[in-house]
Image 1 (tube, one colour):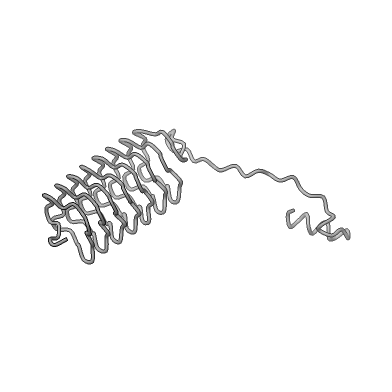
Image 2 (cartoon, rainbow, N blue to C red; image 1 turned 135 degrees about the horizontal axis):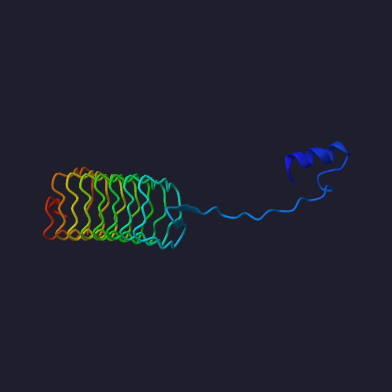
Length: 195
């Protein structure tokens, strides 16, 4: 019952329990469509242009954004669990607290990306370019960075537990308080020693 309906019922001496109930309107989730792509779970939008799009907090789990253009998109607190972003351009993306466990970023471009406090468990960044990206305090458990470029990146407090950094390049990156327990660091350039 709306506030106006309740006020009218009380004005004529009818209590809220005796007033006629209003028909309930079922909630229909709003689907955003950007450049022909319906932005919802399991969306199939390879190659879509989402540059500068505000996708903050959207549930895009399982979506296919292979080769998509997402440069400078807003992905704060979005859910990309299991999504495919292979070969996508995510240059300068704002993805603070992104949730993307199991997502695939094979060969993706994430230059200058902001992935602070992202949850990226079991994601695959093999061959990806993360030059100058910020992964401060990111949870990177069991993530693949095989042959990835993380030069000049902010990796402070990042957790690389069991991650595969074989052949990755971390030269010039800020590693203060980053941890690498059980990480695979063979042929990794700029990786810390003694883990």
